[in-house]
Amino acid sequence: MFVEQLYTSCLSESAYYIESEGEAAVIDPLRDIEEYLHMAQSRNAKIKYIFETHFHADFVSGHLDLATATGATIIYGPGTVTNLPVHIAKDAERFNLGKLQLEVLHTPGHTLESSCYLLKDEQGKDYAIFTGDTLFVGDVGRPDLAQKANEITMEDLAGMLYDSLQFKIFPLADNVIVYPGHGAGSSCGKSLGSETFSTIGEQKLGNYALQQPDKDSFVKAVTEGLQAPPSYFPINAKINKEGYKNINAVIEKGMNALSVDEFKNKMKEDNIFILDTRISSVFTEGFIPGSISIGLEGRFAEWAGNLLPFDQSILLVTEPGKEKESIVRLTRVGYEKFEGYLAGGYAGWVAAGEKYDMIIDVEADELAMDIPFDPNLVVIDVRKESEFAEGHVSVAINIPLNDLIDPASMANLEDTHNMYVHCAGGYRSVIALSLLKRQGFNNVRNVIGGFAQIKLLEDKIEILKSDPIEIK
Image (tube, rainbow, N blue to C red; front, side, top):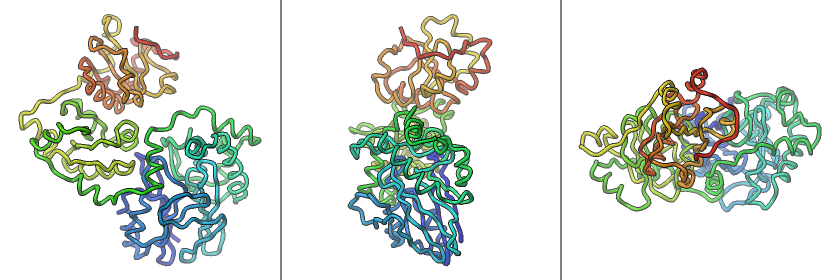
């Protein structure tokens, strides 16, 4: 028996490769399938099954392309509604994989079709359970994502989730390994732990949701404090249910090297935006006017899905050699409209004598010096509301990065304001500043190191815990 967890940190997503006697299965594959194909080939195995725990909302699955490449059968759980060529399993149905078996446990609650897969070893003993978004380390799946599509309340779904956990998961032995679909940072739960796997026993002892005394308490615990899901979640769920273009065709179109003149002509077309994927500290030193910064070094695909339109075409500016990586990571959250990339990157743009823009970087101590003396100074904190509430600069206003994609969020800002923008560490603030620049705000500065550096100057900058204030 061979089991491998394939964890993608920028999406906090776990796919799994399972193998026995030359037969393999993949659970919840990402859209770029080369890693699974390579693993099977290197181990002289054939991928027989592709198991999906549910219709994912936070990424586009590779189920269709992987099935085409291998001839594997795609398995979904009971309650699945789709026109795609899949096998809809029955509850408790078992699938042979070499000397192993995988048993379907229908566990509705996160979605109606949500299912876990119980792996039985060569002796038929329960070994591990692949829980998808039903059970995480320290948390359970959020029950609000499927309510609109199914005309059902999140309380109803939370009740189903309680029953699924009580009657399908709790009876398993404490030593059964729990392999969840996501780790810390995922928006598919509220408080996922830092570990990427656990055991049933550990979760019974340490998972707040599993410690609730009754169903009503459970429903209240898992529905309280849910933040709005990322805006791209419904789009990705629809793509997974209805299908998508072959990833190789998408990559081929995106890998179209454009000269500076060709790039400029593309920029003039309707429904085009420029995405710069260089690291944020490099972007501030110079960029093509109007481009949006989302650096590959952070939660790249997630922020792209939150902030960028799906109905417009993308022109890429990347670090040379990072073009394909940028495209692949964007396809993971459903982007397919690529017009190409700038050959030679930003350096080629500058060498051609084209206009460029910059963002001023400032240290936290410069902010400290300017706050008392500049009547036009505005500190913009682009962290989440929950982060802001835990502590913030006393004079700061809170405009979460998610909100900045809407120009209305900038309605009270004037270009006469001297804007100092920060997040927690510096990644989100540069994205925010590129959006502000795109809307015509030029008097902006990036606070290097974000709130982490600002907190070190509490003797010079007043830090408060309070509600956001409005610009007057």
